[in-house]
Length: 295
Image (cartoon, rainbow, N blue to C red; front, side, top):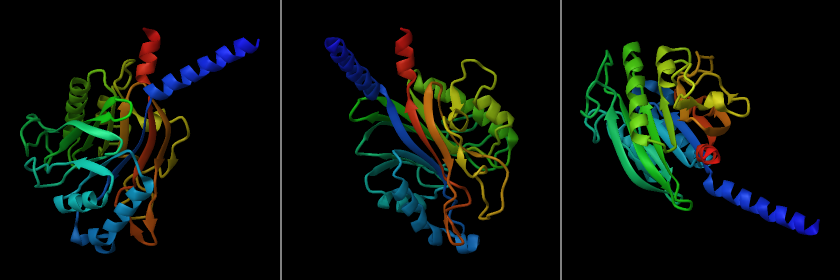
């Protein structure tokens, strides 16, 4: 009996070791920081910028995606986020002009392997291109990261859909789904963004392939193992009055385990962090363990 217990204990250590080695655990945040608009009064960017940086330092996510960042906003945040590296380009020209969707990652844990940006238009590789009634260019910026300890690789996408055109949002979901499938292959991925779509919208249904048994992209709000916490809405318009539904999301590849999902109401007195609330999730990629168990 003693020898049996010892054997089982050893096996237990091996199993735990394999699980720990193969799992990729991530703390992820998505936040539309609101572009620098002087008409925002008490909630203008000069009044909020230190709050945004303080929030990110407090949260210490492994990766985070921002939306609506102008070049000077991006550079300010990037300069103060010690321990993080980032990738971001302007949507107007693929360089510094226009709003950006920068991605940040913990550079002590991850290394950058590859990065690109494509446009949500009929010509995705043409900088500044627009489509389907969108009044502004819309982009997806992505990176491929490698975990320095485990060697595991994954993709991280960040986007901001059109706020004006249903057709643009619908077609953006078509393009994003196709590109994610093409770029990632069998590799794990995370998508953050302000999608300007509600869960009952056609754009959401297309992106998540609603009704399909083999859907690729899953909503962390639905996958959360615990009841999603915090605000139901994600767009606040600098107001405490309840707004309609969710338009900011964190999506993951099918097969991921989502421990929790939180929409954080973050403000100090009357000062809001943004006109959107930050969304935070805890994710574990167990998809490869599941596949290997079936081999």
